[in-house]
Length: 182
Image (cartoon, rainbow, N blue to C red; front, side, top):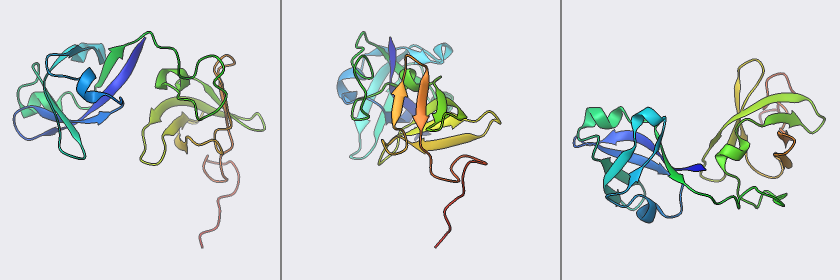
């Protein structure tokens, strides 16, 4: 199965370097210079890492296929992938949010409220500083970012194809009352 290692961000400087949003605990090992990685969308790659560096807070990379700023900027939003056969996160027996969930296990699940009302479909998982967010697209086409914490996401049932949400009032359009501003 293919998992996301990083998402390519904006171009940095003039020689084709890009900022990376890292989604792996081993960027130096998985994105070492000389490594060729598949991409999503597939037409953007595969890409071969020519340089990887960390400036103390952010990761940057250069690819043999993108030698200038214009080519690097065209890669913005491309996901760098890794092939793995590891099914550990979210697999059998992971009933607690302390377990890890891969993005592909969550995207496509129907989002239901604790009362069983259809809220939409999970269409993405956004990384966050404090916690990740499930992006739920409502039947009306609105996107709602739900913090991925146990209080708001009490149950995930991949076999049933559902994720149960307990959103505060006002988070979903037309569902509950928003709290008053103080």
